[in-house]
Amino acid sequence: MDISTLLVECSLVAMMLYAAYGVIYRLYLSPIAHFPGRKLAALTFWYEFYFDVIKRGSYVWEIQEMHETYGPIVRINPYELHVADSDFIDRLYPTVAKNVEKWSWSAGMFGSTAMTFGTVGHTLHRRRRAAFSNFFSTTSVRRLQPLIQSRIDVLCEKLSEKMDNGEPVNLVHAYSALTQDVITEYCFSNCRNVLEMKDFSPWYYELVQKPSELSHMIKQFPHMLPILNLLPDWWVRATNPLFAQLRAQRLEYVSQVQSILSYHDETGSKSHPTVFHSLRDDDGLPLSEKSLPRLVMEAQSLVGAGTLTSTHMLSMTTYHVLMNPPILSRLMAQLEQALPDASTPCSLQKLEQIPYLSAVINEGLRISYGSIHRLQRVHPDNALTFRNWTIPPGTPVGMSSLHMHNDPAIFPEPRRFDPSRWMGPEKELRQRHLFNFGRGTRQCVGMNLAQAEFHMTLATIFRKFGTKMQLYDTVRERDVDVKHDFFVTNPSLDSRGVRVTLHSNSHQI
Image (tube, rainbow, N blue to C red; front, side, top):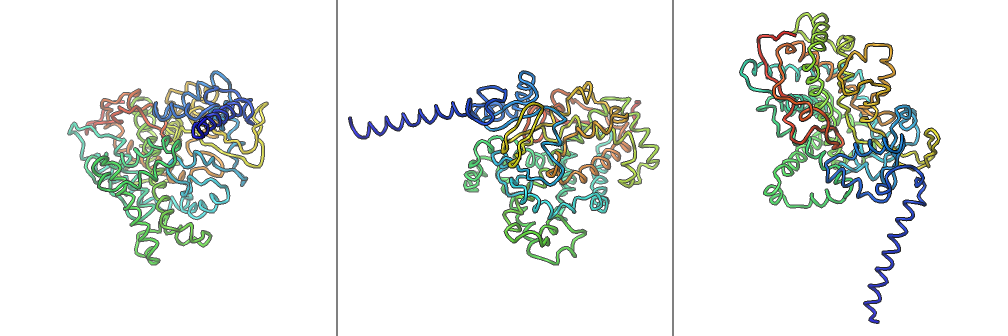
């Protein structure tokens, strides 16, 4: 026998034996082999690939079907478990400082683990987060309330210009412009001014939203993004204008961050200190953590996170309030009582004390989910106990707001938008089961800013335009309900957005 033929045959046999061992190990020898679930999902990541890449972010619903078939804990890929039981939240996501990590395989789904959001290790995450967490504290957010209000005022001016002209306004684009302006001003003291652009610049919404659609592909093939970044600019401009614009946007972040790093007296020349001034001046961060590439990644992460989930929450909540006249009427009555003069801004502290406004916001949070993608955690040092199951140390375990926010035991009739469920004695119990901002030591650092935006925006918009807005060709199943998990929630791909027309003659409610 020819030596080359023998080598080929031996290689084929070795590959077959390796594949056979992989099958046997994953199905029968793995530490999580005894957990229930689909065998194909336990065998290969291609099962998840099919639902999340080919079927565009639909694995979360396949996981839901697994739970309906196999119970509250299921194995969803060769290494990961998923739990659908709200009582398990605090054990998986502890609020005390324990060694809890992210799973490295999924942490890089946005192209890097250099930003705080994608940091795998517990200690490094604490160090990175501590450098700017005070900037998002309740005190800091209230101090910068005029910044937020100034952008809301611009939004109201632009909406007033649309009054009685019959032209529909896409509130997804309007709220995206608002939240982008706020977060860019907050981060750089250099507002993007998207609100002043024509039709609130749908293009800028696409720039923030479209990269999330690639997150599942990047998770499956982490080397894809570095390869794409090697493509020459002329080729990218000719073949993919959106990707070319993303590159240009990254250069914008490079310029803004570099400017802050270079000029240590810049804080005095700006209207207020910024997130990146805080990062630059933090003595607890080593110089390697203040490198330009890492901080640019941080900038991209903060702007994306500060835009998308808030945009979806505001647009979905506005839709549901306008679709329910009794809810609109009750909200308007409380707003008119608290804000007799619609043209005078109200303090955030006072807005937070309007009961029905807070109830509407909580229900908007519940029905908009935040991110429905599972948030995996790894407890490397200790086993976890779930009912009669022992989860081995080092096992990635995830939970999803989709399952928790639709738990009929906590939220009866979960598809119904019902703020009154937040007015009764079970309010505190239900608040413990809201998962929009995550839970534990990695809870969303920007949640106080988001809550301020929700209270101030919805109070102002409904106080000024509540009876002057009418929905325009907006269908819940097509334009509002979540149909895709691109880490953040996404409606149907043919959604036209939540659209309204504005009329100076108030309609009856």
